[in-house]
Image (tube, rainbow, N blue to C red; front, side, top):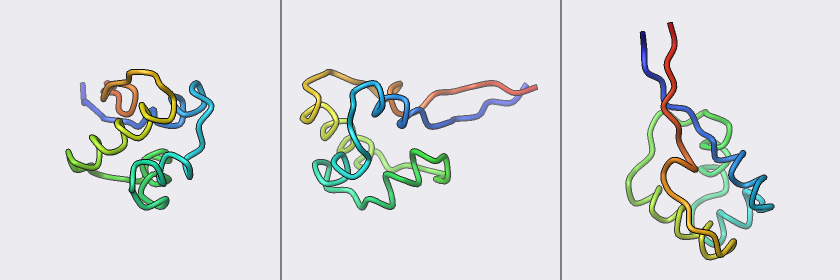
Length: 77
């Protein structure tokens, strides 16, 4: 069994009716970085980037979110 970390950012943004671009602006993160994360093209994420992303989403939506709303650990056989 192998563990894999995948992005669930798009699911969260859709649920909260937010766009990648407005989250990037609010979070002060490059739009391409947000897009890469949402499309599972990133191989890593810095803690400060994750914190900015969570803060930006919370400010825009008024909803409390966590790292589980951005990334999820899955298993593969």
